[in-house]
Length: 88
Image (cartoon, rainbow, N blue to C red; front, side, top):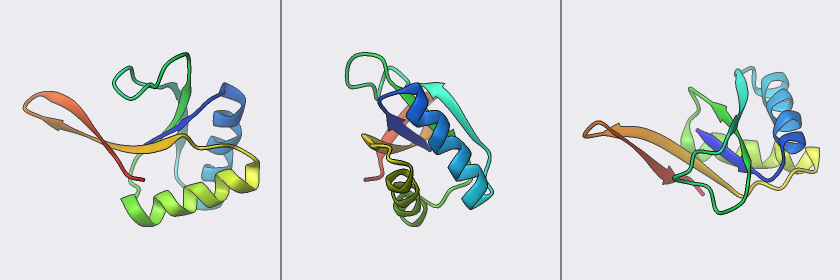
């Protein structure tokens, strides 16, 4: 799951909060080009999350951290290509 944010600072804070509050490893990465909406942005990449339930919890944590989530995507491989689906 990719949680798209605007700045590396927001992404770092959110990644730490997800690890602390949900117990799931979270990594700050450059947003993949396929889901970038222009300019430079950063995402928090987490594995093993349940789409709808966990996306809502991530938005709550982000709000508590003062971070603005642009969008949340799941990714999968289809016919050898990575495809992204907006969760919310």
